[in-house]
Each structure stands twice: as C-alpha cells, then as structure tokens.
Figure (tube, rainbow, N blue to C red):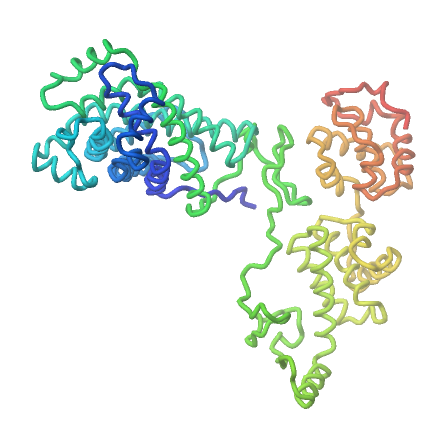
Length: 587
C-alpha cells in the first residue's frame, strides 16, 4: 500500500494576486509611511500625518497612487513569489527544505522581483508623496501607466530604474524576511504538532515574518524611498544618502511595521486560501512529524499507518469506501431514472443485463400492471442477491469495513445462495454470517457481538449460519487469537504502541502457560490490555476496555486475576514500568 497523502501547492501567480489584494487594504498605511520617511525634520507623528492628509485631500487622499501600488505588487510580488515557488518545485516535494536553502531561494527571487518591480515602485513612491508637495511642484500623474510614460518622456527610460540597486537589495532582505521565515515558522508549527495547516498557523507565521522583515529592511527602505523621491543631483550616491539618513535618525519605523504587518498577514492569508482552494494537488509521502525518519507500520486491521516510535496515527481510513464516480441522475426523484444500467455485475446470474420499467407519478393502471408483471418475472436469485449485497454494504459501512471485505462477503453470499444450503434462513442472517466469514477469511476478524450490533439477527442465528457456510464452502479457518483484536482495541482506546506490544506479549504468553484455559480470545485480549495499561502511564479501566471489546467488566476482572499470578513472566523484558508489578491492582 502506498504511504502517501494529498496536499495542495500554490500556482506561480497566487503571490501577485494575494499581494494586490492586501495592497488594497493597507494602501493608506503605506501612504503615510512614505510621507514620514521623506520628511526632513522627523517631528510629524503618524496621527498628525493622517490629519494632514485628510485636511488636504479628504478621504480619497489616503488612496492617492493606488494604481501604482497595484502595478508594483503585480510586477514585484508576482515575480518573487512565482520564482520562489517555482524554484522550490525543483526539489523533492515530499521533503522539507532546510532553512538556508529557503533563504537562498528567497534572496534570488527577491533580487529579480526588486529589479522588475523598480518602475512600479518609483511611480508608487512619487504618487504617494505628491500630496505633500506644493501645488505648483506636484507631478499629478493620472495613474500608474501615465506616470511611467511621463518619466520616460521627461527624464529618460534609465530613470525608471533609478535606485534599482537599492530597491533590489531591499527586496532581497524583504523576501528572505517574509517568504523564507514564514515557510520555516509554519513548518515548525505543523511538524511539532502545535497546529495544522489552518488560519491560526498562517496568521501567527505571517505576523512573525512581518516583524522580522521590518527589522531587516527598514534602514534600506528609508534610503530607497529618499533616493527615488529626490530631484536629480540631490545625492551623489548610496553612501551620501546613507550618511544623510543617519544624521536624521530613524524615521518611519513604527508606521513601517504598522503597514507591513497587516500587509504581510493579509498577503499570506490570501495566498494560503488561494492555495488551499485553487492550488493543484500533489501526492506526497507520509512521514511522522515527530519522527520523520521512522519506518511507518501499516495496520491492515484498522486501516491505519502508525509511527512505531510514538504510536501516532499518521494516516487513517486508507481504503476509500465511497463511490468511485458520481451518478448524474435526476436528484429530484428518489430513484435513478438512468436506463443504461451499471457495468456488468459478476454477482448476478443474469449478467446485470435485465431491464426495468420506470414510471412517473400518476401512471395509468395499465402501465402499473406492466411494472408489477415485470417485477414478478425478475430472477428470484438476483432479487435475493441484490437484497443481500445491499444488507452487507450497509452493515460494513456502519463498522467501517473496507471494500475488499464487502466484496468477499458478497461473493460468499452468492455461493451460499446458489448452493441452497441456507434455504429457510432469513436474508439478513445469511448476509451477517457471510460478513463474519469474510472478516475471518481476510484476516480482519470481528466478533459476533459486533456483527449483531449492526443487524437485527441474534448471535445464535449468525453462529448457526456461519457453521453451515463453513460446511458448504468445504473449508476450515485458523483459530481466532487475541492478537487478531489487539491492534484495533488498543487504537480505539488511544493506547501507544509500547502498551499494545506488551498486551500482545501478555496474551500470547498466558496461552502458552495455560493460564486462561476456557477463556475466549476476546476476553484474554481485554484482560491483557487492562494489565498492560495498569503497568504504564496510560491506564484504562475495565469499564472502558469492556465498552470497546464488547466484554463484561466482571469477565475482564476474572480473567485478569488469572494473569496476575504470573505477571512478572508475562511482561516483555524491555517494558518500561510506570507502576511496578507488585503494585498492580488485585482486580
């Protein structure tokens, strides 16, 4: 069985779309951040700047330059997110990249994104800062594309990439701070078991990444903004701008964080929602998040994949018991009006090629008579077969039996029906006995009580039918042992692998020492689980075990007393006792 799980991976353009959506929400904060970074005195606070913008241009003033902000995100963020996701796909998808590789890929992606996004960034800064200039000095770009055309016409195409070195350097740090740290924090939360791939994990990881990115980029962000907004000749180079900025001291750090944190959080939340809902599916190998190098064990009885180190169920319900395709029938009626029929069914003697008449509401008496006549002429064995298989499917679904067990039971039901060995027995009794027979045959036995619980047939009737089935099939079966039930009982009780192993050893040794003669395998398994759990830190009461195993509490205690006298011999030598044998309960 393949040990794999389904996951979704984002498409290359999801980052740009998510960043553009976040920009629409955080643009006012970005606008105020630019104003504070370009002020010369450093004395205007964030609230004062907000009041100044509102008095000057009203509410719409906070969205001045939005088109440029969107252009920047659709060029800069699409490039860096797209490259980062694309480069990660070149590595094995079922293995987590180490942090240094994530940081390296993020740096490359950020450099490319920063360079490509420089024109949009330049127009964005100018349009946001235009409002604080005197009216006669404002550039008054109509929109982002108008700004690009005018810069090329008035200042030359090279001006579009003025400050590209600073923008690229800043983008490298920003992308490392955001993408690589976000990935690493998210991975740590999921693999440590503190959270899953959910909204809380996305929020916490992006919040931490935003704080880290702000600390890494704020000094360079201020210099980049000043160089882009300064008239030609203001600064001789990066060094001149650096010393000028250092003299003024830190400016805009608080609004930068206030703006970047919401933008980063929203970007990654939007990105993750796009990934989870519209990303493409990838089947990756299952690994234990706590012990990734452990060789996982397949528990065929329970349908689980279990880590042998810690007992964590890494994958469950491995066999899909649902339908394999949809039936596009008319859902307004209770029956399927399709007349083409299903694929040929080998369980039916007619080859499943019989035709049925479907009538609607208000059919005439003559038509209804034809329907009744046709139903009377349907092969009687096929009708019984259909009823029996439907009963088997229903019972199997209720106790979570996989499809191969259901098919085996249906095949046994057909053989019994054709042999007429169980003539006179009810269809449900035959179906229940065939299901019990199939479970035994396939090595995943269920108790008579479990089968009785999902049918209306008594244990006695099922037992009689089962004996007749064995006689009809002319076959014999291995005796049931306590080991056949141990894994399922322990999993349902939430017991770890060491306790399960100890219980299996106790039951096996007890049979070898002839301590439990005359006791059923289920009672022995329940008593062994009780003893092993009492010696461990994961204690379970006879009542809890009895509810899972279908054994009376008193029966468990009586069988346990038979084991107690030889308890030291029954436990494995390497068992880690939490409660010594001498202190185990008397019953």
